[in-house]
Length: 165
Image (tube, rainbow, N blue to C red; front, top):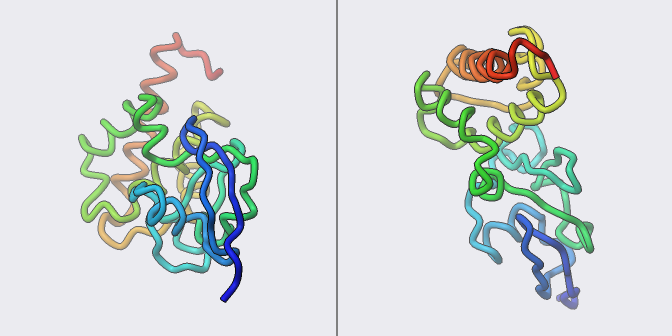
């Protein structure tokens, strides 16, 4: 058995310090140690996108990242962005357009969609589809997800007076 390693990082703006096994994934650390169940574990190969989160402001796959790699890092999960209200309009569009069914992929989809809209406030449908292609959904058929992201983008641009940025 390996010796636990002390891990200190910031999760959703809060400092966290725990002794962890060196091979514990970040997704499992968030779920099992911190009770943050929004980071889902699907394929465990970084393909499905269910474990998508922000690591030092950059999208990352929690299932491919070891917790010990995050020493001193800042992690933001779906719970953190939901609590901050930054995704409220996007979440509302997902609900309004039935862009979720079982909900398993939804946190990763929202994190990825938010990243896209931060980089490009007015993406085309093709750009939305391309950006979300790393997130799998088995329930919705993607059409309603793309519709929700597009509607959010159009509404944000409209509220800014037609300005892209």
